[in-house]
Length: 167
Image 1: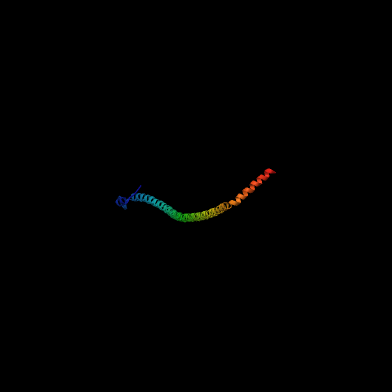
Image 2 (image 1 turned 90 degrees about the vertical axis):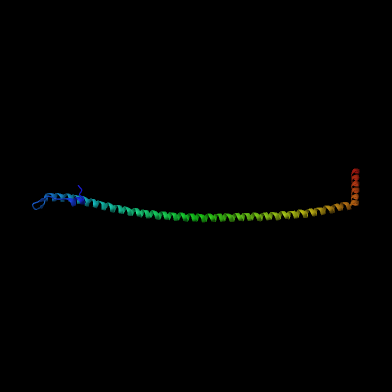
């Protein structure tokens, strides 16, 4: 049974010789005691439930804070990893560029060296051609100058051939 504030204010007891009817007052008091007991029990249960929920809320808040800290730590680690990876990638790129530049420089140096060698070989060829022409010219001059001697050699050769035939 439930008793409201309005029920209490509007409740009227019948009157007897010595005041209100004792049976009605006792019966009403029993009903009120039962209702107040139910409310007290209900209130006690609600307080236990509120304490349990508050404890659970504290646990959830701690978990939330832990998760938030974990997320922030993870985000910081991810950011740090990104920065480190970016720096490492830049170092690798710089090193690769330096190696590429060194290789290109070696290629240019080798190309210049080959051009110098080619120029040296051209000079050597030109000197050889000049020397060969000089030698050929001097031999040609010798051949043209020694016509009388050549005639003598031919004459001796023919005599030698004759002598060989005679023997």
